[in-house]
Amino acid sequence: MAIIRDRNLIEDINDIPIALIANCIKEHQDGLDRLVKLEDYYKGKHAILERDLGGEDKGLPNNKLVANHAKYITDVATGYVFGKPIKYEGGQIDEITGAYKDIDIVSHDSELSKDLSIFGIGLELYFMSGDEVPIPKVTVIDPRQIFLVVDDTVEYKSIFGVHYYEKRDIENEVAGWKINVYTQDLIVSYSGEDLTDFAMTDINKHFFGAVPVVEFWNNEEQQGDFEQQISLMDAYNLLQSDRVNDKEQLVDALLKVSGVSFGDDEEEISKTARMLKKHKILELPDNADASWLVKQLNETEVEVLKDAIKSDIHEFSMVPNLTDENFASNSSGVAMKYKLFGLEQLAVIKERYYIQGLRERLKLFANILTVKAKAVNVSNVIITMIRNLPENELTIQELVSLIGLVSNETLLSLLPFVEDTTEEIKKLKKQLKEDLERTKEEFGFPIVPPEDVTGDESEE
Image 1 (cartoon, rainbow, N blue to C red):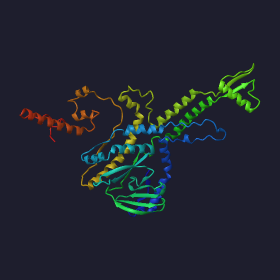
Image 2: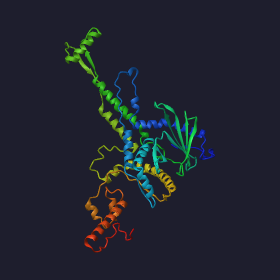
Image 3: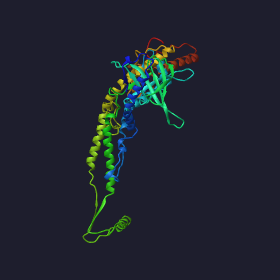
Image 4: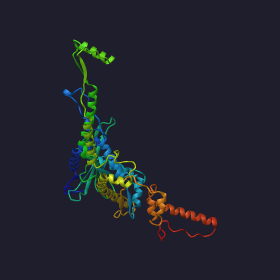
């Protein structure tokens, strides 16, 4: 979560006062407990695991079951929204999309989207690679180690970013802190034994033309996808754990005996009990009786409560339970969309805020490519995020029937194995040209070339 400060507190934007940096770090540290809890829940470290039965209850069954709905919600939500590569379209976008391919931006987006779903925010750090010919790169930093400072205007413009982490010695013991501050033009490094007293150790210039740190939001509240359902998940885990505890206590039922004694002292009683356990035979005199004292379990009511809590978890997170009967395997793509209506509303919110961050990413890549004498215009770039949803694919016969009704480029886009229609058309043109040249050589006379496969009359 970005930290807000008055820009007037800084006289020189490239010389941030150490006292201000330390104060911002302290404010960021105050919010780390929440982030740690959210990651713990995603990894399955839920509150039920800390339950300790002491006092009078000590010795009773204490099962600790974790139903990790947090991981399910995050994995389904991110898979649905970010499961397919993001598409960029624009007049001068080729240089940036080429740079994106070089750094495998698809995997990067997947990692970033996971942070958004868990923590509610995700932060990117931009830098130049250490190759002989440096290229712009971007990496996802754990939001517990990095933050962005913005001004207090309605635009929340970036002032500087801070990335800090522990330095460790050869025995992996903490030996101090490393702090990197990113301004509009500089990268200033600091070192210190703690986060209140540190000194500058290095300073370098960067060429991104802006603060090379971008903060992405998951939603307006900057909350994770399962954050508001933690209390429901705790209730579900408690119910299921106690359900197993009750089963164990049912097995450990007491034997009630009336009209007979198993012995005069503890030793005789223990001996009789061992014989019963070994031989499974109990001989009783007349008018004596034996029966088990068992706890009566109302499984129907418990099951109703369990289903109600589980339904609330999925309803309020807007991530449906894809394993229930509402998602039959024979559902059409259109029917599936109606069933995923709630998830689609969640996706729309996530997409809206993610695209805002993507535009900041485009600007930073455009700035650095301009420095490398590569003109890029990102003002008219169209960003398209495609849902990862099963769809009814058209058969070859259906595609053939559409020839002449829609463009060839549109037909190619309907083929699931064609990722880039523009590139596929270029390949097809090249292939047709080669086939034409080969035919001319074989027959020895000129052949009129076929019409452009794109349907355009003008040639490239």
